[in-house]
Length: 253
Ligand code: PXP
Image: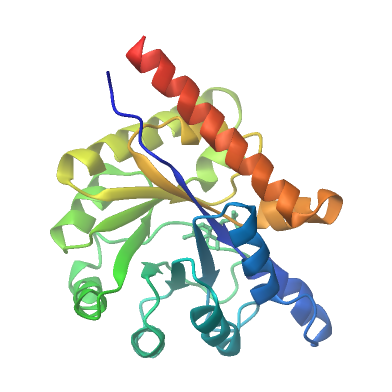
């Protein structure tokens, strides 16, 4: 029988900070959200320290490192300033993402294939500090192979195109994710996925058997407005587990 693998849920708390920053005060506090997420069953906390500090702040990162027992995944651009911050705080993991100032959110994956020489030293220095580094890439064979070539232990596949698509395009995007995740496994890379996932889209992605972590933020924080963060996280966790269980049942039947 095929071994069923656990699927971790990383809860991204950036948009708790977005709401806080809209008024410039201390409420709502991302640290409180992280503690609540931990109690609701999250396996990790993810936070993106952007160059323009539009949501998470340096003080948030310090507080998360100090007070959260769960692994912290720091999303960051590959710049010397961000590298220095990561080396100072030493989160459990770092996820290198592309960053453009005017984008609303992280719009596409890193071009690892086109920037191997620039990115490789970041992966090496983070690894030296025992920070597990992932590269956020589109589900594309060249990008997966390039991530392997520069020594990253982990990739995170961008699920945005899948989540935004409908009909036949959605099926094609899901297939791209499946093939990229299978290739990652073949190359010995740990494979994560995230961006834009919701109750509606998470099942198909969670069913991809070689994925080990999903990072989900915006939808959960939005949904928390209606039913609370605890309930949103528990429902997401249940949807992931159900999809993984169903997929496992199909394989082992
Ligand atoms: N993974 C990465 C690398 C991201 O940059 C983001 C967005 O910050 C997410 C996951 C979570 O995306 P969303 O907030 O749309 O769930």
